[in-house]
Image 1: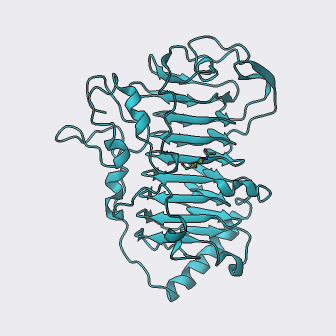
Image 2: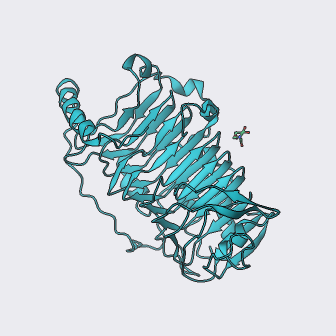
Image 3: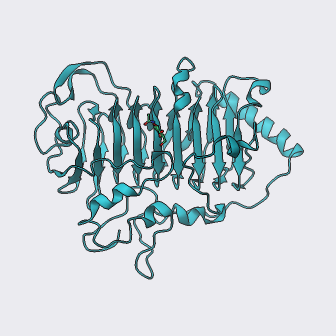
Amino acid sequence: MEGSRGCNVVLVLCFVFATMVSLSMAHNHNPVVAIRRPHGKKIKPHGCVAYNPIDRCWRCDRHWAKHRKRLAKCAKGFGHGTYGGKKGKIYVVTDSSDENVVCPKPGTLRHAVLQPEPLWIIFGNNMNIRLTQELIFMSDKTIDGRGFDVHVSGGAGFMLQFVHNVIIHGLHMYDIVEGSGGMIRSKHDHVGIRGRSDGDAISIFRSSQVWIDHCSFASSYDGLIDIVAASTNITISNCHFVKHDKALLFGASDKTPEDKILKVTLAYNHFGRGLTQRLPAVRFGFVHVVNNDYTRWKMYAIGGADGPTIISQGNRFVAADGACKEVTKRMLVTEKIWRKWTWRSEGDLLLNGAYFRQSGNPHWAKRYKGYPLIKALPAKHVPHLTLFAGASLNCKVGRPC
Ligand SMILES: *[C@@H]1O[C@H](CO)[C@@H](O)[C@H](O)[C@H]1NC(C)=O
């Protein structure tokens, strides 16, 4: 999926194609809805407003700071049941430095995530953490940024490898760069030589039960979130994505059919300005895209290769003027092959000429009975459902978030 080479050619081709399709398909002539997001401003006319089911699970509790671990029961979709560090102690990060990646200093985020036992990790003040090398996690952790502005930027990103049960909540992650590699502690009892890290904000490798909620992502060297090597049972919800070319990659290679077990839910996210492609791009697995707001993309929103199943329900797709109108993109295959892939759009709101090319089995639901699919709400509610997407909730102790 090396998509950016020849991008202009692709753009031109896709205009031509879009024109042809628009002549032959029923076209949606709704005008572009004014797009907005009052980030930072809180609209709370009558106390707490939590519009979507995940937020309703915790946001209106004004004692959230006392009851932090209640968040642990709020994951829905494929990441449901992810409880992170619920069974452990609270660990307060007070030191934003990351100088020693072999014997991390107590009080730093690196020291916290390397502990072998479950931990609920919170912060003692506003901070920007510039990671000197990739931050390698142990299992059963929650990173809970509520109450402070916590930024991870200007350095390496997070690496979840061979772990399970991790919650990442309320972080701003941007300007992530490659780590040089070298001697890095990867477990409480193991230090080893690591190669360069890719420069993804979050890289999930052979891991399961991960829930990423209310994070804001922008401009990183490689991807924003990569999910690879038979990782599964993951939910990404209430996040805000901007300013990036290849944002979300689920399944890295056509040589890893082990990614057939990949299951990811994307719910209540806002894909905003400055995005080009991979929102997400999927290989092999099953992705449920539900009630997200796509307010612009340059090349495509949802793409894939190697026969993934993509169920898109109750999303709002607003094509940008002068960009590709097609939501979907199949990589490197003939139509004869992709016609069999199940890519369905149900109840999506397609605006400003956006169109979703469906394929495969319209009766997919029978085959996937028992999957933990979040029930889609009507797409016209998406601007509300995603109104507070991102990490700018500005939670204050004693007040609802
Ligand atoms: C993923 O979730 C399903 C259903 O809850 C479970 O049966 C399966 O074991 C999980 N897989 C992993 C690798 O955690």
